[in-house]
Amino acid sequence: MDVLQADITRCGGITGWMQVSALCQAHNIPFSGHTAPALHTAPACCVPMFQNLEYFHDHVRIEHMFFDGLPQLVKGELRPDLSRPGNGLELKRADAQKFAA
Figure 1 (spheres, rainbow, N blue to C red):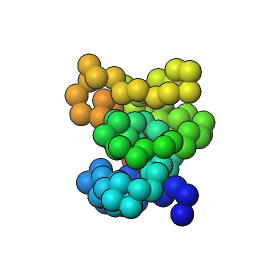
Figure 2 (cartoon, rainbow, N blue to C red; figure 1 turned 60 degrees about the vertical axis):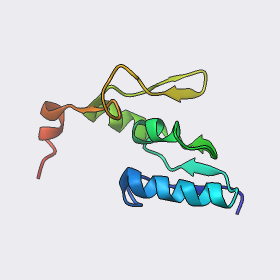
Figure 3 (cartoon, helix red, strand yellow; figure 1 turned 45 degrees about the vertical axis):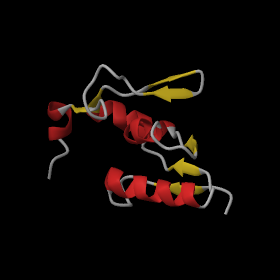
Figure 4 (cartoon, rainbow, N blue to C red; figure 1 turned 135 degrees about the vertical axis):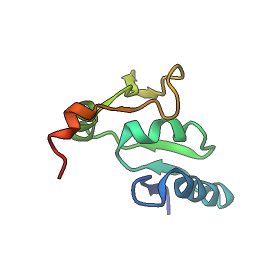
């Protein structure tokens, strides 16, 4: 395996994702984040073997619809906004409400 790719939304949240990262580090395998760039940016900063993060414009478009505080893409790099608490994201409740079941 050249690179192991995991998704926070599919492997037990940030805790599970960090456990996968630890396995990658133990076996000297580069680690990659699967889409959802806003969600993966801050945790990726903690991963020693982190290689890259998939960045699909359709995911980013949807993230902009529902969240404030998204990391900005500058010269090919995403950086978390350290002035915001947690992962920096805040749900736009009014915008998301119309999609509630």
